[in-house]
Image (tube, rainbow, N blue to C red; front, side, top):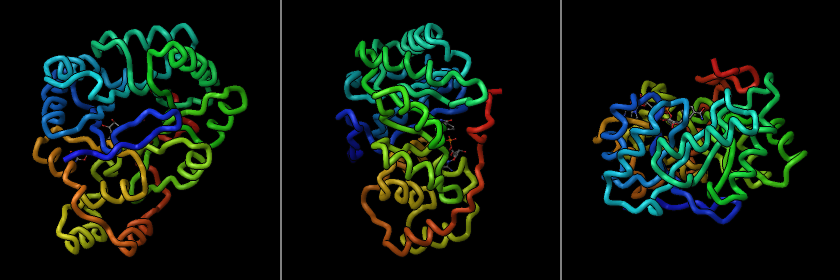
Length: 275
Ligand code: NAD
């Protein structure tokens, strides 16, 4: 099975379905990423704050795949938004990952109360201009944070990675992304586990003869989003990857869209300070 690629606003292609490693301890990450690569995942989503970039790097080093066959994303943590700190943090991520470039580097959270994300963006612009990262983007940015970047930078983020799942559709952010040519990447795409008790999703899954996870991943993909579900269980990795041989009908899509409650599971980007 091959994952379709999306083409980002700078022409770089990225697998639409990737593998996230949030909350996987560093010592377990190598095994998990190896299993994901064996399943066929080529996009890996990590972050400095996850503390498992070394584990990802080891899996990459021990795999038979070429570096250019992989798409590795990492993220700049909020304590390193001063220009020089951001450059150092990037070097640190590369060293831990054992690579000399990233495919995508994101500002992890805007922390508007700190007011430094435009400075961090200048550091990412520099790294991009140097060719050390193939695409740069943001995460958890609200429309006003995107507008702030656009007011003093010509470089449009390639991606905005935000919380998005059936009960939190994050519509205003996705619309702002689309209007600016920014790809929406869904984090917590399975509601961080919360979708599995939803009876409406269970009903649709029964109708199409698939699991709830497959239905929800398919729902994301049919809307053109990048999606990065996480599991350490190889059987579930395979299950989450087997989403290219069926389609949801318009009625199913509408029914899932109707589950939006507007309630986040995670932190609010307006107030989150990284603690
Ligand atoms: P998720 O929505 O991917 O859900 C993960 C949970 O679902 C886990 O408990 C897992 O065991 C369970 N699960 C996965 N597949 C399953 C299946 N087939 N059947 C039953 N249970 C299954 O949540 P997440 O890990 O928070 O999000 C995915 C990725 O998004 C993360 O790993 C990380 O890379 C990224 N992320 C980014 C941010 C950010 O601020 N940018 C925040 C959170 C997560």
